[in-house]
Structure formats: C-alpha cells, structure tokens
Image (tube, rainbow, N blue to C red; front, side, top):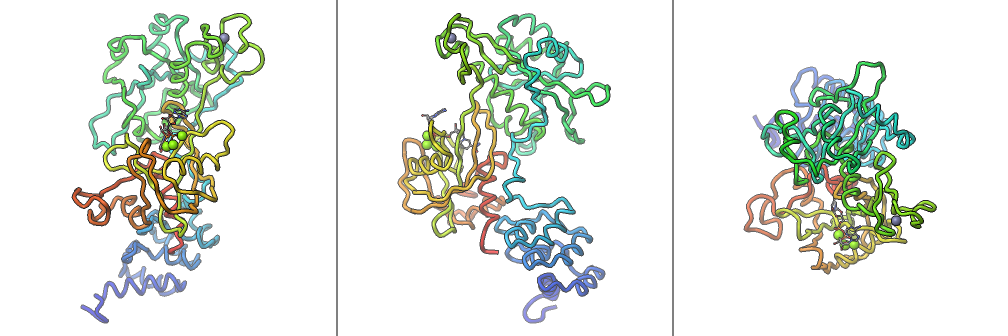
Length: 467
Ligand SMILES: NC(=O)c1ccc[n+]([C@@H]2O[C@H](COP(=O)([O-])OP(=O)(O)OC[C@H]3O[C@@H](n4cnc5c(N)ncnc54)[C@H](O)[C@@H]3O)[C@@H](O)[C@H]2O)c1
Ligand SMILES: [Mg+2]
Ligand SMILES: [Mg+2]
Ligand SMILES: [Mg+2]
Ligand SMILES: [Zn+2]
C-alpha cells in the first residue's frame, strides 16, 4: 500500500524518526507497543531513531529506546555511533543515558585502548633484583612461561578458522615443562620476568593456571628458546606450533594477552640484537630479570652513572591521520612493502631532539610534501616489531599538493570521507570510484582494527561535521 509515494511501512519508519528527533516519547511508546516499527531500522544514511534522538539531545527518548533494547553500536554511513553524535553535539544528558548502558563514544581519546595497549600485568619492577623471589615465582606451578623461538611465539595449533576469526593462542608453559631447557641454556639463558597478574578470562579464553591461594596472582615469564631445537620444543606437548612470521599471528592474539606478548617480544628482540656492551663491545650480562645488560669489562664507562645503553630500547614512532585544509579529506599512503592495495596513515621514527608535533610535520613533509599546522595527540600503541611505540596523532594540513617520496612510498592520496567510510565499514567500494577501475572489489583497503592507523581513521570519521 503506498501513500505520498512511500510504502506505508516506510512512512511509519520516517514518522518514528521524526518523533525521536522531536522528543515525542508518548507517540513512540505507543508505536513500540504495537511493534509496527523496527527499533534499529536505519534511513538511507544509516541513521537510527537513537541517532536522531542523540543529535537533538532527546535523553528521554534515548532512555525509552534503550529500555526497549535498541542496538547502541550501530554505525551510520559516516562510521558514527549514537554516542559519537551526542559527544560531537555535547548532549551530556544523552551521554549519561548511554553510559548507563556502558556505551561511550570511542572518539574521546582517553577511552581508546589500542590492540597491544592492554596489559593486565603489574610489572613489579621493585622485585627485579630479588633473585630468590624470582626463583620461587619461576618454580611456582601456577606460573605462566611463554616461549619464543627466534622471536616466533610458541602457540597452540588453532583450527584453521577463517583468517579474520582465527585466534592465535599463546601456549602457557609451566616450570616443569621447560626445566630441561633452562638446564640446557645455562648462563646463556635469556629469561625475562614480565609481571604478576591474572587474565580476566571470559568463556573464550583459557585462563592461565592460577593457584588456589586466595588473591594469588600469576607470575608471567618469557624465555628465548632460539638455541633449543624446534623438535624438542614442539614435543613438550601435543598440538604446538611456532608462529615464526609475525603476521597474521601477532594480530590474532586474544586481546587480553596481546599486550603481554608485545612486552615479551620487544624485550627478547632487544636481547637478541644487543648481545654485547654497546659502549665497549665486551660481553654483557643479563640482569634485573631481563631489564638490564651489565658490561663485564672493568672500568667500562657504561658502569658509571645511568646509561640508556644498558636498558631495553623503545623507538618512538609518530603515526598520523592528516586532514585536508577543507576538513573533507584525509591523506593516506602506500608503503612499498604493504600488502595488496592497502593504504595507511603516514608514519615515521622520531629523531633526537624533536617534539612529537615536529616529527609529524617533518615525516609528512618528507613523505608527501604536504605541510602540517596543528597536531593533536590521539592515542598510542606498543608495536613489537621490534620495539616501537606508535604515537597516534591527528594533523591538520595547511597545504594540499602532494609530492610522493618514491624512496619510501609507492603512492599517497587524499581520500574523501565517503571513500574511507565505505571501506572502513567493509562495504565493497564501487571499482569506478577510485583510481583502479579494473580491479574487483574495493580498490584500496585500510589496515585491520588492530592497527592504530585504523583507529585514527575511525576517530576522524567520528568527528565528522556532517551530522
Ligand atoms: N602499527 C601501525 O599501524 C604501523 C603503521 C605504520 C608503520 N608502523 C611501524 O612504524 C615504523 C616506522 O614507520 P616507517 O618505516 O614509515 O618509518 P620512517 O618513515 O621513519 O622510515 C623508515 C626509515 O627510517 C630510518 N630509521 C630511522 N630511525 C629508525 C629506527 N629507530 N629503526 C629503524 N629504522 C629507522 C630507516 O632508514 C628506515 O628505513 C615501521 O617500522 C613500522 O613497523 C606501524
Ligand atoms: Mg619517513
Ligand atoms: Mg623517518
Ligand atoms: Mg614512514
Ligand atoms: Zn662496556
């Protein structure tokens, strides 16, 4: 049945959106009672009734919709949730209602915890010199020990699920499992103490063996078993494998363990690369539970005072989502080693004596010729390849012309919000929309959600003024 050219159902739906915008709780209650509309239905731009109410600050409508179980996580075509819309328009009463349901906007940087960024362990740095305490912890049957073979994590063989669904489960070894390896490695062993903690395991994650003592926290260690034969390692128990290449495994870890693995892998990478004293080349001893190298040569300058050569290195890297001067486009680049048609945020190692803001401006100018003015910090991410700290920023360009540094990048382009939103939400791009009309499916794609670049793009989309 049609009226005004709209099918009656669509008319009802439009009316429902209007009531949400105007705050007409009474009518909406009646409509919901009759069940004549789908509470999560969206209009052509992906907006739900909850979003319309969030846009105009109708907190009573929001409460009504939440009470009727509406979906708060739906994203519109600009990748915004109702919480983002309420945040953008500063409707705190609406945000309070949403927060009661645990739904806050991801665009507030303080809420963003990137993959690898969550680490449940207390590092207990004050215990690193207590050899006896460490030995007791190591031998405790509840202790978890991770094994790495040439920086490849030893994992439980996962069934071959579809790649994106697959979880790479780090294998949790006990002291008894690896006592023979410690024997074999002797003083050459590189064993690092990661900390005390407990995975708040949920049904999908096998929690590590925590002893039954009340409040007893689990100690976590990592051991480098590169010089142990793979055969011996894989024979400890059934169904083990060594995830020798970092990807995709490193991006498929249970979220609650990814940060622990990043901490361990970066530490072991430091030990692997810095076997000798960087100051005089003499042998160095692993001390302080794996967090220090001490030169064995008497009188070495590194033995007097505090020297950063004796401690694990972390390389700060800026990674930035650059917004065009008109606010409507973002700058993405394609590194030479990027897979497929992936484009990502520009990134670069910081240099000595440089602020984060200046590193952003320098790297963007070096790689694309674009000038950047204001720089805003967003969030950070430990990145264990080998030991970077990604410092995620939004930068606002003051120029638009691109000159690609072909030394480093294959390409760099401005992408519109629409192009990026469609790819981000996974809807396949029409191939004629972008530069590569011959290719099937989207002619570019973004890094997965585990990459901070993905989160920066999402944050920008959620800040869209076109609400
Ligand atoms: N997590 C993410 O989403 C993400 C995305 C992009 C890049 N990254 C990481 O950020 C790192 C830096 O990005 P980039 O390669 O574009 O940097 P970049 O643009 O500074 O160029 C890399 C070059 O910088 C030089 N360099 C300077 N300091 C260095 C250091 N401490 N270690 C190694 N090389 C150094 C080397 O010549 C290297 O080839 C990469 O290694 C990559 O692993 C992470
Ligand atoms: Mg660079
Ligand atoms: Mg650089
Ligand atoms: Mg770079
Ligand atoms: Zn030395």
